[in-house]
Image 1 (tube, rainbow, N blue to C red):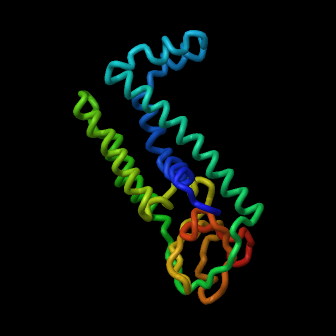
Image 2: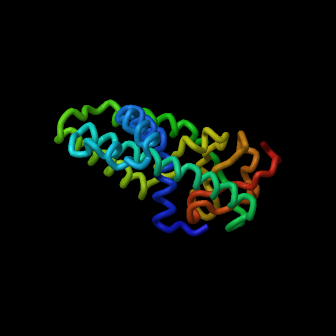
Image 3: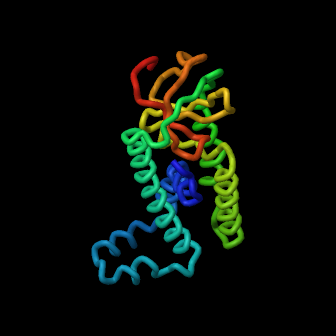
Length: 207
């Protein structure tokens, strides 16, 4: 599968879904949402009624980011299923060494999600700092190994492995509990994001 920028962005937003879910719960004005849905003809009046305040701005921003990240989650799940079903970009890799990276998900939550959620947003300066930190972290994640750290995969019982092959290092998303079985062997994989993030064949051998 090719990896245009828009696909990497959707992969990134799906990875940060837990953050945007928490921000949605923290900042969203649920009363405004309720009346916006109940009286949909007056959606603009209810939904954007206090956008010029810090509270209103954070509410709208949290809703937009939450909805977009939720959409990205469904899209990435669909792409994974489609990639497996149609065997997109199928090729085999020779495994020299395997390292589980499941713990990276917990580190990601403790390092990036919790500190951002706990930041103060009582005045405009704090809100600007808050937004800049989110943008900076996501920008760095987009062009680093953090792109593959995705709690969504863990929720769907997929495991992450850093695999050293004869052609370099890759990240393999797998249903298998242990890829050590494949050391010194070939493993059939499909491309999810370029040649760096792969999905292994859903065969049961060695699971």
